[in-house]
Image (cartoon, rainbow, N blue to C red):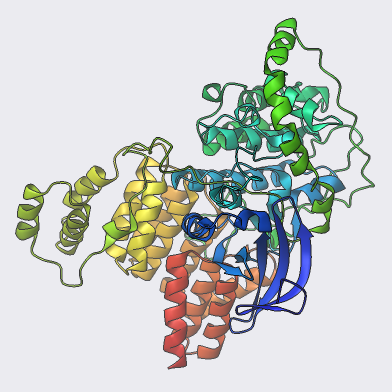
Length: 612
């Protein structure tokens, strides 16, 4: 039976068709055994013409499925059904950023919240060697729970793996958001092509429209390659010179002149926008109210001292309901210098050859509006490992196999002797690190961690190492890795939260948690991390019942943001009070909030213990 409403595809029952794009059709389906809905993307049959497609499809899908990040829609499964290849992903119920921007302008705090989620997702994916290639508002999903998810990683790469006529040499991307090098069809592109598209999203959220738009795909593509972007002040007078400088640098035609990472772009953007009004919409555009405070994750700078048992009040002042949004002004046509015209003539043949491919992509634009939950346009691709230059050792994330530490750790002198004979054995190094930690030789452990994770531009190596170690229940070793990560990457929220939770799981003394809390408060941070520390301190000082009452009170008042870590802590508090049913409910809620893989493993184990 083919893909149709009511049909079964493996363990999934098709519930409804969500939409159709140029590469795939998206269905909502139900997995009865797991009692959850999923989104199934079915690739166009043309991609299956190559006999070796399924093998390549499997290889590429495995790369995408390894992406585990709070702001990336995860891939659950991939397979073939009636000769058609498909991906199974998390079903995200909400709206796209494209839908949201179509309703009106965003406040400054909402722009920052969404931009931070996109930046963190991109930095993580790029650190894993995965390139998106189709960053645009319809691939950014927003939920009423305050979630920001980047969708459709890897589908374009998977489609190209089929080497069909439709995908060979195609320009992957959407004209309004495509980078100049991608629009030219350059083979050698890197993460900065995603940063360019991210810059256009920032531009659109601030200015109220994209920098380049026209009636035809040819005109848009030509402008992306040759025309300087119009200053955003042309569309929104509230944009400051500093903010304009940041946006124009992100949209530089030369990749080397852009920001090196999405995180660097977000940091510069955040600094430039901070001094602008909260409602900084262009004239005639109404500012939409922010999402529910309980759902919004924001960094806070005015957290109460840790000695106080009460959690900080994070509830922002609600904004008035918006008036009907007026359409943005039509883009002003920019006059091109003569040299651009001359170069344009030379490139005309190249652009014309790729035009019919671009038009095919644009053909699905109208159909995107049918999707409220999942974007259907072609996603990005991982950076090919065989053709592209591999990442340098300093920036390459550690391999998962490196973190196997045997249950019975050998003596330090034996491990040091073996390492002297084979200094490149990373698994041996991790076992020696565990031996050092076991012997309270933390400085020796830190020295060896410095050799394995040298100075990098991204914290990905520390994230990967810590998650693998925590999954293996090597909390003491993970804490040393995360402490080093906090030193090198001040303000990295993922490292902060993981370290706080590891301290809690290790039952660290109150003064040690208090010291960590003060260090976190001195850096950019998330409210949930501070709340975790404060609740733990209350638990240790005043008992589990008091801490649980405080957590429930703040959740009821909307003063605590939704967080899987907080619901996990709530479950632990119920266990301490001998309330297994309530603990199970809290753990189930934590799982619904998509915790990190290592925490999901721990929660599942604790739920099994409760059942026994």
